[in-house]
Image (cartoon, rainbow, N blue to C red; front, top):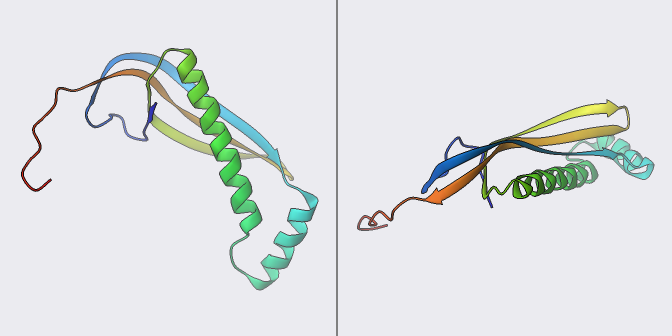
Length: 115
């Protein structure tokens, strides 16, 4: 599956647009994580616990979007975007969406010398 934030995938032609696909996940913060984050807030710097939490929720949203695209018969998703929102003081949603497409490799173009 080719997943790209661009409108086109280099080396491929869109032969069919299958429609919007999306994936989302809502995660709740852990009380222990909030305590550690509060301590780090005093000292400054990155809150690794939240960074890890957001990375996990982002991956889950992408996986769900890809599963939706595969169910449509897509082999690519273009114009992928992410959006997050606070659902409550302790929960956040991550949404990933894009356009599911059927891609075909373009005819081979001879490589230029030095590539």
